Amino acid sequence: MSGSTQTTPEVLWAQRSSTSDPERNYVFVTISAPDVPNKSFQVDLKPTSLTFTGHSDTKKTTYHVELEFFGEIDVENSKTNHTSRDVEFVLRKKDLKSEYWPRLLKESKKVHFLKTDFDKWVDEDEQDLAPDDEMGGGMGGMGGMPPGMPGMDGMGGDGGFGGIDFSKLGGGAGGMPDMGDLGDDAEEVGDDDDDEMPELEDEKAEDEEGKGKGKEAGEPATSSKIEEVS
Image (cartoon, rainbow, N blue to C red; front, side, top):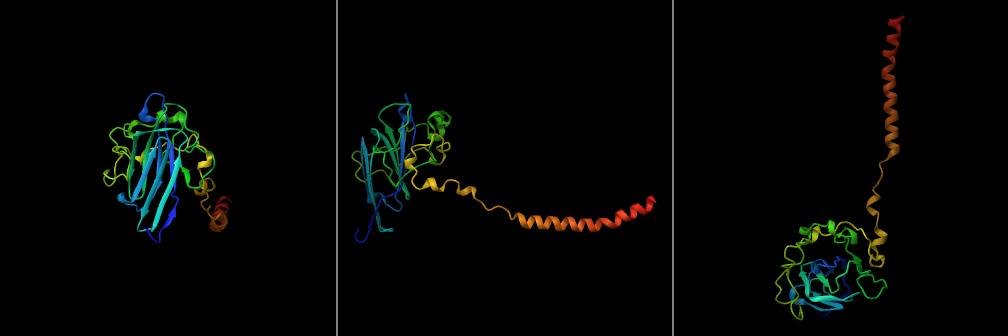
């Protein structure tokens, strides 16, 4: 790893809650660590924390982040998936509650690398509107956490979430989680609405020119009609 730099990766998160169904009571965490092979990263998952370290030879970068959770999770029933772009976790919350965690981390201070995953976020009171098939029928059949998680060896190349389709999760940004997690995204909201307006001055000029030509073309017909009446 000589000559490499250490970087704190971007972390996205979202969540679900339930008072009766453990499989619908969890936290999504996605750590962005591109080009980190399976053999080159370590994950230490505990009931109150997650530590990730991964090295990319192509980018000459070592990614490292430590997360201390707001509440406790059930390590044995949590899931993970490693791709060429990131490492995704579905961490089951220990306590069955209808209330969302107010934030992912124990401390309320803002951290620059943590952002809300709006693609997966659903408001507390809109969770029942998300079809079960969008969440892969809960977390059954998904790849689990190997004991001790020594680099997740043995999980296979892409390790797995089974039938869960992360591209379909979420239902908009309703519920708006702790704004402290938004990072720099808050300044970018609305950028897509600033599309350039048509050049109204040019259209107005063309419209007036067209009316002028129409008027000239119509004058002879008017004169002819008057002569016939007389």
